[in-house]
Length: 511
Image (tube, rainbow, N blue to C red; front, top):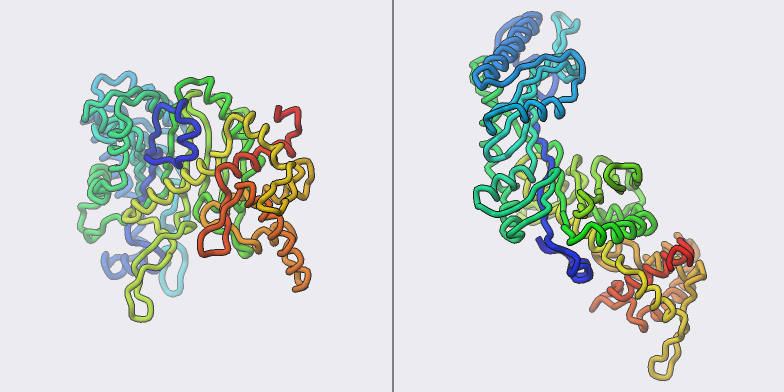
């Protein structure tokens, strides 16, 4: 996996390996009964039965699924347990796995009472009406130790429409693949602390989104839901979507001490410097005044084993935390894919062309998930690349004060203790400028807002142009060729970032 060179070069002596890999992935399968009218039509036309007889039939089918679960568990010599409440399923399965002699296969089947979407019967015009509603029902959890995917589970609702959910873990899959390829590794707590061949491990991890998922998911569904083979469903199959996908970028450091010292500065920079616009940019969006949603940053210091920062944009989030004190993990979690834009072929005005469209949840978009999440992680690391050993940057802050002579013209310095100058530094360093740079007008809006008077706007633009020139002659920003845009240089990111941190945290903390 290729990291931004600024981050990799800066910490190369301290980094052992870098691995991008899926973590939690949850697939969900839906039978084609989307609304009330479809269900009523199915009962009337396909089953040709009275609507009031449909629910008693479903009760019998629910019992069939429970009996099938008991039989499957007995044949696999695995426990079947029923719980009326909410047990700690993961802890229970972990205890069962430790006692199990055979490493692979069915570990346990748990039957739990949960409230899920199913159908009810109500009065209608002339005859009863079937409608969707939430009601308590038995839900089956099949836990497997799969030979290819490691620990996984299948969750099946026992009442119509038999929605199914399948959980797999990309790190578990990668561990099994490395075992088959005879690659050495050490895995602890869903994390790899040693990799003999990092490049080959990355190649194996990149195969995950390209697996034949539809075939594999249908195979698992038939294993737990024998009703799919019955004629009354009319050979209907599941439509599969990606309910949740977590993609992590793990950076393994040579020592815990190195990461501990660096991680505190990374957290500090993320809390102080990243605005709502920055978070939107990391997740592939540009800020718009009509954005309907919240951008939240959550910082937890009391988390074990260390602190964690999480940035939320609607149902998606970006996290950074340390694993085992030696691995820095940046993770993108996608729950609402339509917040991401991807290129698709569409017909526009009779012509076939690539256009930007919202990303969908269907499993055919798995590769799009991969690109979107990986890009978000890399943008976040790119924004953090200005953090490092603060001493050299703080020592160079004094160069901001000194005037710079170019030809016969002298350009005044900046005052790192002056709020007006620090606000300029923070404006050009904003994360939403990472992708395309910034213009004079962008900085003017950040510093002065929307000024209605044209003459005042021109005066503000001229003043900002002079200040940007002072940054340019010092090598802190550079012009994008053939445009009116500017980009912050690596030198500018270091020194201006240090000046902003120095201003907001005080000299005592910066020293």
